[in-house]
Image 1 (tube, rainbow, N blue to C red):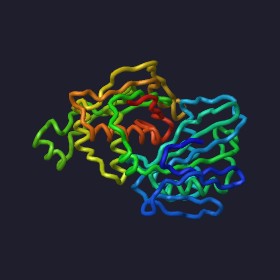
Image 2: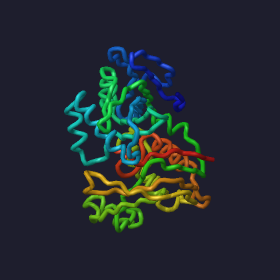
Image 3: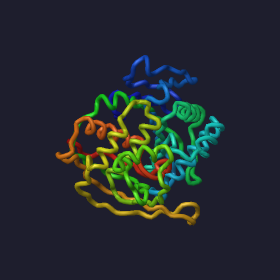
Image 4: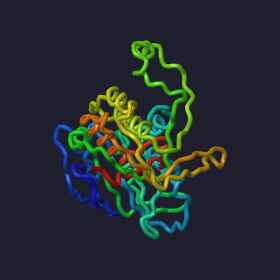
Length: 325
Protein backbone atom coordinates (compact mmCIF):
# COMPACT_ATOMS: atom_id res chain seq x y z
CA UNK A 1 0.00 0.00 0.00
CA UNK A 2 1.52 3.31 -1.09
CA UNK A 3 1.63 6.15 1.39
CA UNK A 4 3.18 9.60 1.31
CA UNK A 5 6.97 9.85 1.37
CA UNK A 6 8.51 10.46 4.76
CA UNK A 7 5.55 8.91 6.54
CA UNK A 8 5.55 5.84 8.72
CA UNK A 9 3.70 2.69 7.63
CA UNK A 10 3.00 -0.12 10.04
CA UNK A 11 0.94 -2.95 8.64
CA UNK A 12 -0.26 -6.06 10.42
CA UNK A 13 -2.80 -8.75 9.59
CA UNK A 14 -5.17 -10.46 11.99
CA UNK A 15 -2.34 -12.61 13.42
CA UNK A 16 -0.75 -9.30 14.48
CA UNK A 17 2.46 -9.88 12.53
CA UNK A 18 4.29 -6.59 12.16
CA UNK A 19 5.81 -5.27 8.97
CA UNK A 20 7.61 -1.97 9.39
CA UNK A 21 7.93 -1.00 5.74
CA UNK A 22 9.31 2.52 5.97
CA UNK A 23 10.57 4.90 8.60
CA UNK A 24 11.18 8.53 7.69
CA UNK A 25 11.54 10.34 10.97
CA UNK A 26 14.13 12.01 13.15
CA UNK A 27 15.12 10.93 16.64
CA UNK A 28 14.24 14.22 18.28
CA UNK A 29 10.65 14.11 16.99
CA UNK A 30 9.70 10.44 17.20
CA UNK A 31 10.13 7.86 19.92
CA UNK A 32 9.37 4.14 20.04
CA UNK A 33 6.68 2.62 22.23
CA UNK A 34 6.22 -1.13 22.42
CA UNK A 35 2.57 -2.20 22.67
CA UNK A 36 2.69 -5.98 23.00
CA UNK A 37 3.31 -7.26 19.49
CA UNK A 38 2.79 -3.81 17.97
CA UNK A 39 5.59 -1.30 17.64
CA UNK A 40 4.07 2.17 17.68
CA UNK A 41 6.42 4.87 16.47
CA UNK A 42 4.82 7.93 18.06
CA UNK A 43 5.45 11.58 17.45
CA UNK A 44 5.32 14.21 20.14
CA UNK A 45 1.87 15.81 20.30
CA UNK A 46 1.61 19.11 18.49
CA UNK A 47 4.04 18.17 15.72
CA UNK A 48 1.89 16.30 13.26
CA UNK A 49 -1.05 14.06 12.57
CA UNK A 50 -1.46 10.27 12.71
CA UNK A 51 -3.58 8.33 10.23
CA UNK A 52 -4.93 4.88 11.18
CA UNK A 53 -6.66 3.00 8.38
CA UNK A 54 -8.69 -0.21 8.66
CA UNK A 55 -9.42 -2.77 5.92
CA UNK A 56 -12.12 -5.26 6.85
CA UNK A 57 -14.34 -7.87 5.25
CA UNK A 58 -18.08 -8.06 5.82
CA UNK A 59 -21.22 -9.62 4.33
CA UNK A 60 -22.79 -6.12 4.30
CA UNK A 61 -24.66 -5.73 1.02
CA UNK A 62 -25.93 -2.17 0.99
CA UNK A 63 -25.55 0.97 3.09
CA UNK A 64 -25.88 4.74 2.80
CA UNK A 65 -22.31 5.60 1.85
CA UNK A 66 -22.57 9.36 2.28
CA UNK A 67 -23.96 9.15 5.82
CA UNK A 68 -21.84 6.12 6.81
CA UNK A 69 -19.33 8.39 8.55
CA UNK A 70 -21.77 8.81 11.46
CA UNK A 71 -21.47 5.06 12.15
CA UNK A 72 -17.67 5.20 11.75
CA UNK A 73 -17.62 8.05 14.28
CA UNK A 74 -19.82 6.03 16.64
CA UNK A 75 -17.29 3.19 16.43
CA UNK A 76 -14.51 5.68 17.23
CA UNK A 77 -16.17 6.64 20.51
CA UNK A 78 -16.83 3.00 21.40
CA UNK A 79 -13.17 2.18 20.78
CA UNK A 80 -12.03 5.17 22.81
CA UNK A 81 -14.43 4.37 25.65
CA UNK A 82 -12.96 0.86 25.94
CA UNK A 83 -9.35 2.04 25.80
CA UNK A 84 -9.53 5.42 27.56
CA UNK A 85 -12.96 6.40 28.93
CA UNK A 86 -11.74 9.73 30.34
CA UNK A 87 -10.33 10.76 26.95
CA UNK A 88 -13.54 9.67 25.19
CA UNK A 89 -15.64 11.82 27.52
CA UNK A 90 -13.36 14.86 27.15
CA UNK A 91 -13.43 14.76 23.35
CA UNK A 92 -17.15 14.04 23.14
CA UNK A 93 -18.05 16.96 25.42
CA UNK A 94 -15.61 19.43 23.89
CA UNK A 95 -17.15 22.26 21.86
CA UNK A 96 -13.92 23.31 20.17
CA UNK A 97 -12.17 21.95 17.10
CA UNK A 98 -12.14 18.17 17.40
CA UNK A 99 -8.63 16.62 17.48
CA UNK A 100 -9.70 13.80 15.14
CA UNK A 101 -11.60 13.07 11.96
CA UNK A 102 -13.30 9.96 10.60
CA UNK A 103 -13.82 8.92 7.00
CA UNK A 104 -17.00 7.43 5.57
CA UNK A 105 -17.10 3.68 5.01
CA UNK A 106 -15.63 3.02 1.56
CA UNK A 107 -16.30 -0.19 -0.40
CA UNK A 108 -13.07 -1.31 -2.08
CA UNK A 109 -14.66 -4.33 -3.72
CA UNK A 110 -17.47 -6.74 -2.94
CA UNK A 111 -17.24 -7.66 0.73
CA UNK A 112 -14.11 -5.55 1.38
CA UNK A 113 -14.33 -2.15 3.09
CA UNK A 114 -12.04 0.62 4.29
CA UNK A 115 -12.29 3.45 6.82
CA UNK A 116 -9.75 5.59 8.60
CA UNK A 117 -9.19 7.91 11.53
CA UNK A 118 -6.91 10.95 11.63
CA UNK A 119 -5.63 12.03 15.04
CA UNK A 120 -3.74 15.09 16.23
CA UNK A 121 -3.15 13.51 19.65
CA UNK A 122 -0.83 10.58 20.32
CA UNK A 123 -3.11 9.47 23.14
CA UNK A 124 -5.95 8.93 20.66
CA UNK A 125 -3.66 7.01 18.32
CA UNK A 126 -2.43 4.75 21.11
CA UNK A 127 -6.03 4.02 22.20
CA UNK A 128 -7.02 2.99 18.65
CA UNK A 129 -3.93 0.82 18.16
CA UNK A 130 -4.40 -0.80 21.56
CA UNK A 131 -7.97 -1.69 20.62
CA UNK A 132 -7.01 -3.34 17.32
CA UNK A 133 -4.18 -5.19 19.04
CA UNK A 134 -6.83 -7.01 21.08
CA UNK A 135 -9.77 -7.10 18.66
CA UNK A 136 -10.05 -8.32 15.09
CA UNK A 137 -13.77 -7.62 14.72
CA UNK A 138 -15.86 -4.46 14.81
CA UNK A 139 -19.54 -3.78 14.30
CA UNK A 140 -21.05 -1.23 11.91
CA UNK A 141 -24.69 -1.04 10.79
CA UNK A 142 -25.43 -4.02 13.07
CA UNK A 143 -23.08 -6.10 10.91
CA UNK A 144 -19.78 -7.70 11.88
CA UNK A 145 -16.62 -6.60 10.08
CA UNK A 146 -13.55 -8.84 10.30
CA UNK A 147 -10.39 -6.71 10.39
CA UNK A 148 -7.77 -8.06 7.99
CA UNK A 149 -5.31 -5.16 7.93
CA UNK A 150 -4.56 -1.94 9.77
CA UNK A 151 -2.31 0.78 8.34
CA UNK A 152 -0.60 3.57 10.20
CA UNK A 153 1.37 6.61 9.12
CA UNK A 154 2.47 9.78 10.87
CA UNK A 155 2.83 13.08 9.03
CA UNK A 156 5.42 15.54 10.28
CA UNK A 157 3.90 18.99 9.66
CA UNK A 158 7.27 20.72 9.84
CA UNK A 159 8.53 18.48 7.06
CA UNK A 160 5.26 18.90 5.14
CA UNK A 161 5.77 22.67 5.16
CA UNK A 162 9.46 22.42 4.26
CA UNK A 163 8.68 20.16 1.27
CA UNK A 164 5.70 22.18 0.02
CA UNK A 165 5.58 23.55 -3.54
CA UNK A 166 4.53 27.03 -4.71
CA UNK A 167 1.94 25.75 -7.19
CA UNK A 168 -0.62 28.21 -8.55
CA UNK A 169 -3.26 25.81 -9.92
CA UNK A 170 -5.12 22.88 -8.35
CA UNK A 171 -7.98 20.57 -9.13
CA UNK A 172 -9.67 19.13 -6.05
CA UNK A 173 -12.27 16.35 -6.05
CA UNK A 174 -14.65 16.32 -3.08
CA UNK A 175 -15.49 12.65 -2.49
CA UNK A 176 -17.82 12.94 0.48
CA UNK A 177 -20.37 15.71 1.18
CA UNK A 178 -18.65 18.93 2.20
CA UNK A 179 -20.10 21.99 3.89
CA UNK A 180 -18.70 25.10 5.57
CA UNK A 181 -20.00 27.51 8.21
CA UNK A 182 -20.09 31.12 7.16
CA UNK A 183 -20.63 34.06 9.56
CA UNK A 184 -23.25 36.63 8.57
CA UNK A 185 -22.25 39.34 8.24
CA UNK A 186 -18.60 38.50 7.71
CA UNK A 187 -16.24 41.44 8.20
CA UNK A 188 -12.50 40.59 8.19
CA UNK A 189 -10.82 42.29 11.16
CA UNK A 190 -7.90 43.56 9.07
CA UNK A 191 -10.29 45.83 7.13
CA UNK A 192 -11.18 47.77 10.30
CA UNK A 193 -7.76 49.24 11.01
CA UNK A 194 -7.14 50.22 14.66
CA UNK A 195 -10.69 49.21 15.58
CA UNK A 196 -9.69 45.59 15.01
CA UNK A 197 -7.24 45.78 17.93
CA UNK A 198 -10.06 46.89 20.20
CA UNK A 199 -12.31 44.09 18.99
CA UNK A 200 -9.63 41.50 19.78
CA UNK A 201 -9.74 42.71 23.39
CA UNK A 202 -13.48 43.16 23.90
CA UNK A 203 -14.56 40.46 21.43
CA UNK A 204 -16.17 40.55 18.02
CA UNK A 205 -19.85 41.37 17.53
CA UNK A 206 -21.85 38.15 17.66
CA UNK A 207 -22.42 36.70 14.19
CA UNK A 208 -25.16 34.44 12.91
CA UNK A 209 -23.70 31.40 11.19
CA UNK A 210 -25.14 29.75 8.11
CA UNK A 211 -24.18 26.51 6.40
CA UNK A 212 -22.59 27.01 2.98
CA UNK A 213 -22.70 23.81 0.86
CA UNK A 214 -20.61 25.08 -2.06
CA UNK A 215 -16.86 25.15 -2.77
CA UNK A 216 -15.22 28.28 -1.38
CA UNK A 217 -11.40 28.41 -1.21
CA UNK A 218 -11.41 31.07 1.54
CA UNK A 219 -13.71 29.09 3.86
CA UNK A 220 -11.89 25.85 3.02
CA UNK A 221 -8.34 27.07 3.62
CA UNK A 222 -9.28 29.12 6.70
CA UNK A 223 -10.76 25.95 8.21
CA UNK A 224 -7.61 23.90 7.59
CA UNK A 225 -5.46 26.80 8.82
CA UNK A 226 -7.41 26.84 12.10
CA UNK A 227 -6.69 23.12 12.56
CA UNK A 228 -3.00 23.69 11.85
CA UNK A 229 -2.87 26.59 14.30
CA UNK A 230 -4.76 24.67 17.00
CA UNK A 231 -2.88 21.37 16.81
CA UNK A 232 0.05 21.67 14.41
CA UNK A 233 2.72 23.01 16.73
CA UNK A 234 4.59 24.33 13.68
CA UNK A 235 4.42 28.06 13.11
CA UNK A 236 2.44 29.30 10.14
CA UNK A 237 1.96 33.05 9.93
CA UNK A 238 -1.78 32.47 10.04
CA UNK A 239 -2.88 36.11 10.42
CA UNK A 240 -0.75 37.22 7.48
CA UNK A 241 -1.86 34.20 5.44
CA UNK A 242 -5.56 34.70 6.24
CA UNK A 243 -5.38 38.35 5.22
CA UNK A 244 -3.74 37.39 1.90
CA UNK A 245 -6.39 34.72 1.40
CA UNK A 246 -9.28 37.11 2.07
CA UNK A 247 -7.80 39.68 -0.30
CA UNK A 248 -8.07 37.24 -3.21
CA UNK A 249 -4.94 35.12 -2.81
CA UNK A 250 -6.78 31.94 -3.87
CA UNK A 251 -9.70 32.02 -6.28
CA UNK A 252 -12.30 29.52 -7.47
CA UNK A 253 -11.64 29.24 -11.20
CA UNK A 254 -14.08 26.51 -12.17
CA UNK A 255 -16.27 23.60 -11.06
CA UNK A 256 -17.31 20.28 -12.55
CA UNK A 257 -20.17 17.93 -11.63
CA UNK A 258 -20.94 19.84 -8.42
CA UNK A 259 -24.13 18.67 -6.74
CA UNK A 260 -25.54 18.87 -3.26
CA UNK A 261 -26.67 15.94 -1.12
CA UNK A 262 -29.15 16.17 1.73
CA UNK A 263 -28.59 13.76 4.62
CA UNK A 264 -30.92 13.03 7.49
CA UNK A 265 -29.37 12.65 10.93
CA UNK A 266 -30.62 11.80 14.41
CA UNK A 267 -33.49 9.63 13.23
CA UNK A 268 -34.76 12.09 10.70
CA UNK A 269 -35.05 15.04 13.10
CA UNK A 270 -32.25 17.03 11.48
CA UNK A 271 -30.70 17.27 8.06
CA UNK A 272 -27.30 18.27 6.73
CA UNK A 273 -26.50 19.38 3.19
CA UNK A 274 -23.09 18.97 1.56
CA UNK A 275 -21.65 19.12 -1.95
CA UNK A 276 -19.54 16.70 -3.94
CA UNK A 277 -17.74 17.16 -7.25
CA UNK A 278 -14.63 18.87 -8.58
CA UNK A 279 -13.39 22.41 -8.06
CA UNK A 280 -10.46 24.19 -9.68
CA UNK A 281 -8.47 26.63 -7.57
CA UNK A 282 -5.97 29.19 -8.80
CA UNK A 283 -3.59 31.68 -7.24
CA UNK A 284 -4.02 34.88 -9.33
CA UNK A 285 -0.81 36.52 -10.52
CA UNK A 286 -1.69 39.98 -9.17
CA UNK A 287 -1.72 38.69 -5.57
CA UNK A 288 0.71 35.76 -5.96
CA UNK A 289 3.20 35.34 -3.11
CA UNK A 290 5.58 32.38 -3.04
CA UNK A 291 5.58 31.96 0.74
CA UNK A 292 1.78 31.95 0.89
CA UNK A 293 1.66 29.63 -2.13
CA UNK A 294 3.78 27.11 -0.21
CA UNK A 295 1.52 27.43 2.84
CA UNK A 296 -1.50 26.81 0.58
CA UNK A 297 0.12 23.66 -0.76
CA UNK A 298 0.89 22.37 2.74
CA UNK A 299 -2.64 23.15 3.95
CA UNK A 300 -4.30 21.40 1.00
CA UNK A 301 -2.12 18.32 1.53
CA UNK A 302 -2.97 18.29 5.23
CA UNK A 303 -6.67 18.64 4.39
CA UNK A 304 -6.45 15.50 2.24
CA UNK A 305 -5.62 13.60 5.41
CA UNK A 306 -7.81 15.27 8.04
CA UNK A 307 -10.78 16.38 5.87
CA UNK A 308 -12.37 19.79 5.96
CA UNK A 309 -15.46 21.72 7.00
CA UNK A 310 -18.53 20.74 9.00
CA UNK A 311 -18.78 17.20 10.40
CA UNK A 312 -15.32 16.03 9.34
CA UNK A 313 -15.58 13.76 12.40
CA UNK A 314 -18.50 12.00 10.66
CA UNK A 315 -17.09 11.42 7.20
CA UNK A 316 -17.74 14.84 5.68
CA UNK A 317 -15.14 16.88 3.78
CA UNK A 318 -13.08 14.02 2.31
CA UNK A 319 -11.25 15.20 -0.81
CA UNK A 320 -8.20 14.50 -2.93
CA UNK A 321 -5.96 16.71 -5.03
CA UNK A 322 -6.24 15.37 -8.59
CA UNK A 323 -4.06 17.98 -10.33
CA UNK A 324 -1.52 20.57 -9.23
CA UNK A 325 0.97 22.67 -11.15
